[in-house]
Amino acid sequence: MKIRVLLTVLAALTTQARAVDASVTPPLLSLIDTGGQQLGSPYRSTPFVELLTPGQSGREISVPYVPALDARAVAGDEVYEWGRFQERVKWASTVGLNSSVTAGLGSPEDLYLTNCLLQVPADVSIALKQALAGVSNLSPTPAPEVAVSDPLSEPWTYDQVDLYNPQKAITAEQLPTLTPRIDRTSYCADASLDPAPDIPVAYLPGVQTCTPFGCLSTPNYPQPLYINWPLLAERMWQACQNAVAGYADYQKNVLQSVATHLPAAVSWDGLPAPHGDRSGTVMSPVVGEGSVLPSAAKLATQNPQWLLYFNTTFKTLKEGFLPGQGAASGAPGVSTLEAFKRRLEPGTLQEQAVHGYATLFETWQQLDTVVDVRPTVYWSTSLECVLFDCTPVPVPLPAPDLLVTPEGCTVPNPGTIGAGSTTFTMPRFHNGYVSVPEGYAVPGLMGEPSLRLPGGD
Image 1: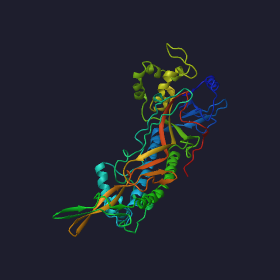
Image 2 (image 1 turned 30 degrees about the vertical axis):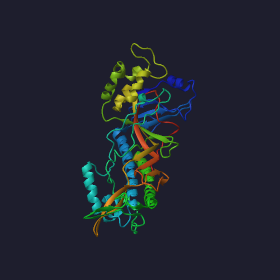
Image 3 (image 1 turned 135 degrees about the horizontal axis):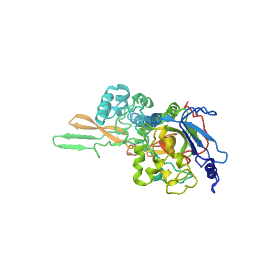
Image 4 (image 1 turned 135 degrees about the vertical axis):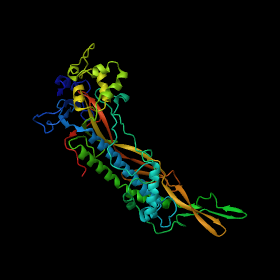
């Protein structure tokens, strides 16, 4: 079943009082086609949507539907690839900081010697901590769901819908364990064993000596008497610098996932290279994995006319009338009720065509700041002595904070103890569903479309 927006409506849209600028005005969803043999496009033997670019000489862009599972696969790969990169930076910095050949006390996964060389002590510790936390290594699995944008909760107008960003930043809550969740081969190569002992160059240990008459301790025991944070920060920085090379792999792998699962998607204004704080957008319409009816029913409490309106076929609504109401202005249907369709989950192909809306999967890069609050720790030792017998005791010290950008790593205060946090400021891939009423603007798409998606090579 094909439903085409009247050409007179499109003409009205392109002659509004405000000038149409293709660089800032999104396209319109002008057609939903459930499939059939038509000439003139390689896509029209399969279900597709058609978008009309703005301006009097607008182009019609056909984009075929994909199963929602493919969209969830891309969303899952985006989370997985970012998690791998974040973990690589975190653990490369940690083992690089603790890379001295004499670093043998502390959490085995934090120390280069026990994690990257001996391995068995770290394997036991990692397995135990993962089991206690109920997690395992990160894996590329489809996202359980993709969030639907809710433009009604954000400022939006008929001409330009601002896309609500439903994806939350990946923080320590989603990487909850203080133990690696990627294979050591991902981060051990970013550091190397330092053959020089840490004492006395990197620090002088605190000492406590006890006799039958009492104990004497160095100031601030068990803290070191002296610690050379600039030297240690240099180690951590170098390992971090090496790990940041993985950012290019993060981008490449996500682009490859998009090309694999959404091969006929349309790239709008370029996904690979961000412009300012965000890149262009890749979009593809999706067929839901269930009915849209439960999603539609949830909206009934917000407007008593909604369900009657929703259950009226779009063939009637496109004339602009609803029983008891006059014609809607500008676009098909009644615009105040059409807006509710922007909050619908993806339905079946037939439901989207009958009810006059399409759900589009969109993905883009956006400049983010993500703070990994898990502390990077340097393991020093103190000495507990009884008469002439001294026992080394591990003393964890939070390292200076790290800042990470695509250009590399920075230690803002290398001479002081920080919280050991790692702050990433760089473009990351985001994604979401946007449901669009037929004849209305598609949010998130600006600039010029390209029919060929880069394959991430």
